[in-house]
Every structure is written in structure tokens, then in C-alpha cells.
Image (cartoon, rainbow, N blue to C red; front, side):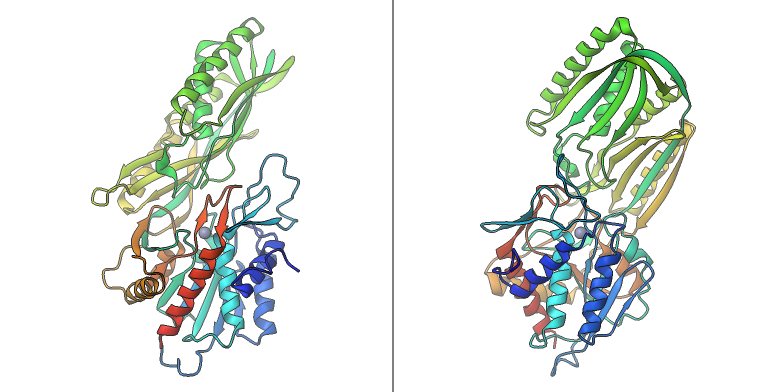
Length: 482
Ligand SMILES: [Zn+2]
């Protein structure tokens, strides 16, 4: 008996639980990709797996549906793996510990991967069931969506016939997405040099920030631990002799950094002043973020006296200047759509190695020209500091289509089934629809999905009743494409 075997729709939750047993964080999707291929083979369905691990599975139309337009069902195989401090699971080896609490499904101590495991579960449950009515189906399951939509970018779509696409990678029930931002990952590197210094060694920690998705939650005014660390280091080095021995923060370019740590050495005579300064700044920052970051912890721990490998002064000031002057957060709001972000970026990850300081941002905009300008700005900042930028995972925006039959159909079925008014939106996050629309001329698509909260965090939850309603909606739409 599985943890989810009493839930409805039974087969959707069966496959979701199977998927959760297979570790499938981004870049670790071979096993889940093979699982989907085995699934297709066992059921005699035509399928192919490409070099990246993307899987396409075909199923013929139900009797009477041969003239309906071919529909592409699409989702991604990878998930964002994050875990709570102290969680013993190894997310590259262990399955998740699923917990059901009332209408919520979550994973104990980790993210759940409802984004986007639920899409895979829906697709497999539809493919296996010959009683479900549908036109010809092409199920496209991509890898590495969460790290720059690498799978969709690499996908050869030339054997896809469908020009109607249901993307199951959204997490607000009742909201149907019909456009998204384009973006890129920018990795800047500044070379550094090291020396040795004596002093009192401290570890500075910024922890327990709220974090969140760098697209969906960038406008919520949350603190970014990497940015705060830049501010702390700037003021500290401005006021005393302090040297940087290590520096690392954040987990992913597309997650708002929840923590950052630095090891420093301070001239012995200034140790007390250092401690006072950290305390004062911590209090000031906590006051600034009293509502947004109530759990924030900012502190320094003494690690004892000693000598340490530290950055040479010129390198240290370059690192600090990079953090201080790197733009972060919302850059521009949409002019026509109230409350929607148009251009933003997130300083998601920083790291200091023997050779260089690396800082990685996820850049987004629904306007290609603003995205380009922001990329140029980052390039110029890196250049100014003697370094360079590498842009990767660039993806196009998905522009709103005034005439969309699939949008009209799904809105009609949704409103009939629920009695509620559907909402049509564009989002400030990347969706694979943009890339696929680029590859499949004339593509008509909509993105939707069951209700989830706090995706990409350890607080991620999936609404069980919403999975059921979204299942009915999907079956209703497929049944209507005759
Ligand atoms: Zn997703």
C-alpha cells in the first residue's frame, strides 16, 4: 500500500508516488526518463528518448476521435530539490517522504516536486487508460526545465504533428497562462588572488530568509541573502581591517537566496568593534524587513585566532563591489498590465574558488530589448571588475495570441465544470511553451495545473482536491477535441 493509494484520481496519485520514489532533481533525470520509456514499452506505445533524456510518447486517437486535432501534452521530468537544514535525505539517491494532511500533499523536509511531477503523473495515467476519450496524443516530457529549460531547448520537434499544446506546468488552479517572459542565466566570473593574514577569525551567517521562486515571487519584496552579504561586507571592510577567507550563498540561480555565509579574519584590536558592527547592521536589516523576513538570522561566530588564506585587497574590493553594484530584483513593471513585472533578475548563487569569484543571476523580461539591455549591463559590470560573463539557457518569451481556440475551449470547459470564472494571465517566469512555440510554427497553447503553494521550497504543497478537478478538466478538454 502506498501513502497515496487512498487518494483520487487513483492512477494519477499512483504514478505521482512512483515518481517520488525516483530521485529526479535537475541534471539527475536519467532514471525517471528511463522509467517513462519502460512505461511506454510495457504498453506497446511508440516512444523515443533523445540524448538529453527528453521523452516523447505517442498514442493513437480513441475510436471516433481520428479527425480531432493532435494534442501535445507537456510537462517536465526534473524538479527543484531543496531540503531543510538537518534533513538526512540524499536527494540524489533517496526517494521523498510523502505526507498527506487534510487536502495537502507535501514531502517531509524537502521540496515535493509537484512541479512538475504531477504533469508526468497525469500524462502516464491518460496514456495507460484506453477508456479515456482523446484525439491523437503526443506526450512530451522534458528534462532540466528548472535549470534554464535545457531539455526543451535541445528537443528536436520535427516529428511532432500537434499544433495544440496543453502545458501542465502552472500552479494556480483557475488561472490559465497564455504568455510568459523570456530569460537567461548569466554567470559572471572575476579572477581573484590570495594572500595570508593573521587575525581573529569569524564566520558571518545570513540564514532563514523566505526565499522563493525568482520569477513568481520576485515582486514580493523579500530579502536576498547574497545581496545582504554584499552590504555587510562593504560596511565592515569600510570600517575596519577585515579580510575575506570564504564566501558562498544561495542554491540556484532561479531561487531567491535564502542563506549566505562568509568566513573572515579581523585585526585583533578591532574584534570587538567588528562584533558590534555586525550586531548593529543585523538589527537595522531586520527592522527593514520586519514584515517580509520575520525569521531572518544575521550573526557572526568567533572561530578563534589564527592565520588564514584571504583575498588580496584588490580582489576583495572587486568581490564586494560586484555584490554591491549587481542589480537585483524588479527592474521594471509592465506599463499596460497593472501589478505585473516586466523585467527582473535574481542574484541566486555566489561562490568563491581559488581562481575566481562567481555570481550567477537569472534574468527575465517579456520584452526582448529590455532583456538584452540588462545582459549588457551585467557584462559591463563584470568587465569593469576585470572579469567576464557567460550567458546560457537563453529562452524566448511566449507572446500572447489574440486568437486561441485551445484557450477558448479550456476556459469554457473550466467554467462549465466549476461554475467559476477563469482567469487569463501572462507570467513573469519562463515556460517551455515559448521554446516550443518557436519550434512548432502556429502552435496554439495554454499552460495550467493544479493548485500548489511555495514551489521550489521545502514548504511546497499540492492540493489533492485540485489534482482531481484539474484531471476532470483535462479529460473534459480532450473529450471535446473530436
Ligand atoms: Zn515547473
